[in-house]
Length: 169
Image (cartoon, rainbow, N blue to C red; front, side, top):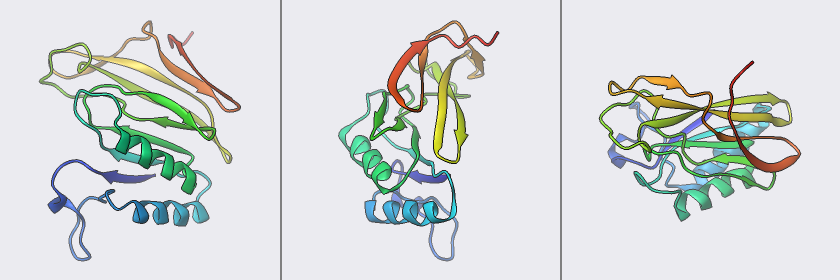
């Protein structure tokens, strides 16, 4: 797993002698990190802190996510906008632009009081199958699974994203 941030001040960026975040605004560094990680790991998953609050995935997110897949990432997962965002396949690889809120309070709309827990089944070739489980946040920001609510899921070899509830028998 590789973690990057494109939100907040660049002053939070790690320095050679100071801890901080990995800033993803330098696409070439992100791509080279993925290429290097792929040489050492079976699965590479960049986890992104990105996007505009309360909006759909933007062109920047889509461009960078696709670059990461082209560089060898097996799946790209994101968060930050306080809402769930699109899910898509690109060149046979899953991109989840935002999982929405999870354990976060102070929001009033249904969109910002909802998040997804992403469940992945992996093998050495990448994502075998995946689904999302809806979590509804209460007033204190505590998540409660909503297994009857529909959310995206899919499996390798079938680039179709289906909406289904995820109640486990």
